[in-house]
Amino acid sequence: MITKEIATSVREDFGKGPVRRMRASGKTPGVVYSGGKEALALEFETKVLFQELLDIQGRNAVITLKISDGSEKSVLVKEIQTDPLKDSLFHADFQEIDLQKPARFNVPLTYRGKAKGEDLGGLTQYEKSTLVLEGKPLDIPDDCQIDVSGLAIGDKITAGEITLPDGVSLISDPGMVCVSVIAP
Image (cartoon, rainbow, N blue to C red; front, top):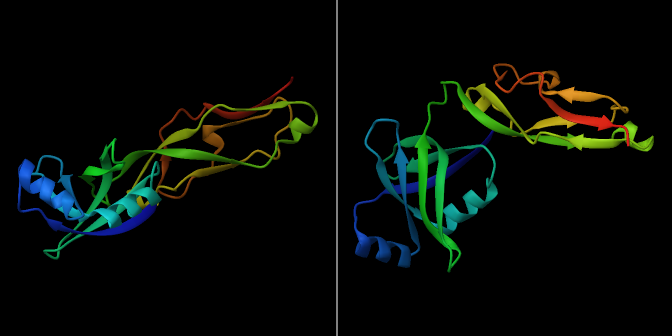
């Protein structure tokens, strides 16, 4: 899983006027939710936050928030709000996680190679793009790579055949077909 660090500070001012002034000064408001605890209001440097979130867009990532009071929180991106007219960050929501507690993640599948069955006229069908895996957040792979180069016409690869790292288990149906080569 991807890891990032972002510096932030606790937000002191609330309300429409102070938040507008904050955005005008190049900062973005954010909130960290902690599962039953009180939410923590933060402010980020917009340019830094935008660049870090752009790097991890659409992928699983654990972000370590380095808060100006000396504390740190491990979080996942929950929601990003943007201004549709200015195409700029408006607000960021994060969910605090425990790095030692297993959790479920949707992990993308990456297919490599060209199936040998294609050379004989077969068609490769990519049927799944993600798997659901469970494990400690830092043990979850960034993606699951599947080599299709050995597939002949009529062959398939199921979710249960994909090799996973130690400590990570498959939640998706192991019999689910991920990729197959069919006759034309």
